[in-house]
Length: 506
Image (cartoon, rainbow, N blue to C red; front, top):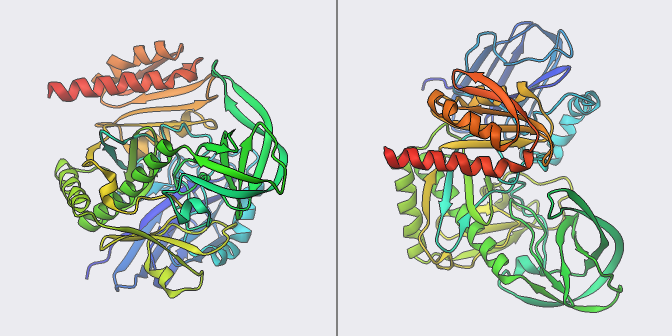
């Protein structure tokens, strides 16, 4: 059997370069780190041999470098010879092997990052013991809710007449929490007792687009019908004794309900859920599980992230592209299973239950509490998940329609032109239209438009005009400064109209 390259993620830090060779259940692991290269080899549980040899962009200190193995991957911490010198790429040659990608979950600006970096190296072994599978919760709260990119892989847009999908940062697909909303996702009312009520603040966006801070209270209940945000799913809305709940967040094994009216501890209260919002989330989340499982089964396409919203859901796949034939095959299989009215059921497992190893999942957070929750679509998929789901695929109601996105969007508060260009280089913009921005969400910032030269030449002046900015570019890239980052959604609509028009003409 021929050797294969292991899928490899990397990211840059002031003192270290981090690499992760993604091989599950690895054996016979060998890592050789020299001043100018790394050689990695191993086998997986099926006996497949992996081999990677990388000539580094710059010299490293091999004596002060380490590697750690987990059940999901092998991570290497390679000490730079020249610290605080950025690496624009990992390889000596300006090439991009198909198996090598930037780990944008862990890519961040360097300022004030040295302590975090050293702590990451020193305590990584301990972290691996606590977390069975790789993937700490990404600090991506600053991403535009319409645009998260994780190596910006291929994505599937899921469309329906009844639930059309948008995007939220994908978080942990875990089995944390055990609330009434999870035990009975169809319940609309619930009686419980107030445990505590403490002063709190909630940051929101006002009607003028500026951030506002609301004063109120965090109310903790003995149990709750309102789902806290988690597993890629937004939180519920509803009322407690007819008092509006504006946000629900998880804190360990409890949920904080933000209200602007205090509630007395010990009081029995009636909780009601916004059913239209809840049922929409149930449909979309179950639909995501179904599509993810089918895409993996038919073509080995792994889901790297997903985002749920009001108009459209996006499932990002670990592939540079998805063909029209693959989309059609996934859509046909998914809709067959909906027509077959397959049941969806939930079971809870203890952390040490052997069955945990048989289900799909992306890891457990450090503050995980309680049993592990597994959501199963009969004969299709079993997956760790904390979200609310339908009890039968027939509740998806209408056939799912899939499509692949032609352009990618990314917004991040922290970053610079170099960061945006690294993303553009990773994705490749010869056929993909990219709109990348960094800066203040509602204020000034930087933007990059990249893609086919003709498209960029046509769209760039209009993008700059919408953002009230200016810039310059050539050969399919246009970058500049903007004063109105709050108008990114208008740019998205502009790009989508252009793509739609071009597709219609073809």
